Image 1 (cartoon, one colour):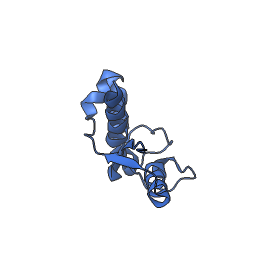
Image 2 (image 1 turned 90 degrees about the vertical axis):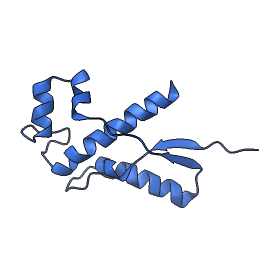
Image 3 (image 1 turned 30 degrees about the vertical axis):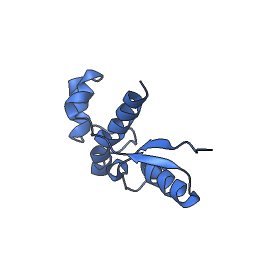
Image 4 (image 1 turned 180 degrees about the horizontal axis):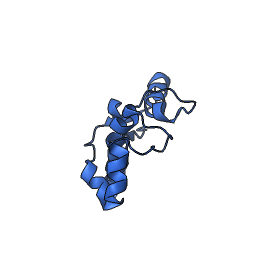
Length: 102
């Protein structure tokens, strides 16, 4: 019997390390480490990050500029550079995984 391998769209650039009570910014790395330690069968798939321009397909240009320039708080209610750096990779993972299944 062949065991199915789950595709995991992960890159280290997705992980944002900054002071927070939330584990969310570190979850991608923690999950991959846990699954590796448990010996679970999965395939790590790389992907392209989205561009800042890609966000304009769904968001107001002023909002995008203010988030990326750290003039406006992000979803973690801060302006941490690490969060901004991880955005394009986190969104890229979502886009790549959705594209992979259609």
